[in-house]
Image (cartoon, rainbow, N blue to C red; front, side, top):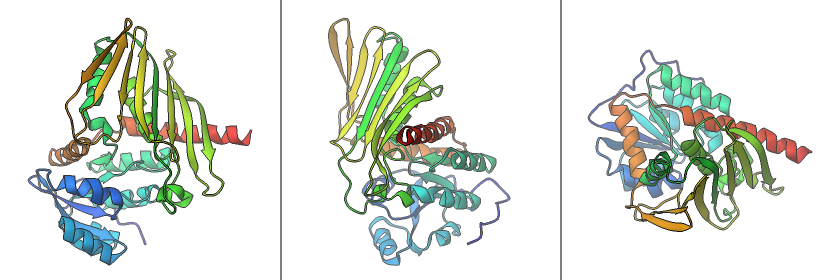
Length: 340
């Protein structure tokens, strides 16, 4: 299918500032489990169309969550009542359909990773900026208030100068046929669970992190990496140790060790809306627990996306670009370790 011509303006054809019409580009589990139920309660947005390669699936999702079923992704992009799309397709398909959506004048909320390479990510970030379109990578955990609390404690010097950041995100083995176990669809832990500790490191320590080492555990049966680790460092000697996996016991935690103490948080990445986080601070031989109020990171992320569209505010992509570059370098370094 030929690429659509670039639009003459940088706004979606139906950029209604009162209500943003959202189209669903693919009926993945995360869409029906988390995004669509939350979108229904977001002021200023409504689901207007649901696209799938399977017309029965599109009709079923539309019946449950609203909108009109559409057979085929491009047909959804051609609709005037769709100003923005949510794209939960497999990672290997992201670049193609994000590009088509942007060239059709649509704002895009895409599941992570935005693409499978830094070059494609940079291309799409530039395309969105040139046309004044919002492009948001759907890492939801940074929108949870517990991460603001962590950064506030660090800024206040609660544990002195940060010296070491450690974070782990690992999940139990995936079922047979899961897209994360299919290399042709962009599967593997580096493009999935690794993204959470990596994005948290960038959020906490800044973007001046480079790869010092990386290792991945390849699975000969599926052809994807099932887990691994990345060592990052800054010019001032601060380091970040990231661990991740797709075939492990569930772990979701981070810790910042400073010159005079440490900050630790559990269940920090896939935090349910009703969960009450606790930030644990250890310093001077004492342990302090800082309970926080529950927060809905999914609602916050969707609200921010819709607000950016309605304000015609092009989003910043510094963390997204830094993230994609680190993934590229970690992949290269890990392959060299394996080859050696």
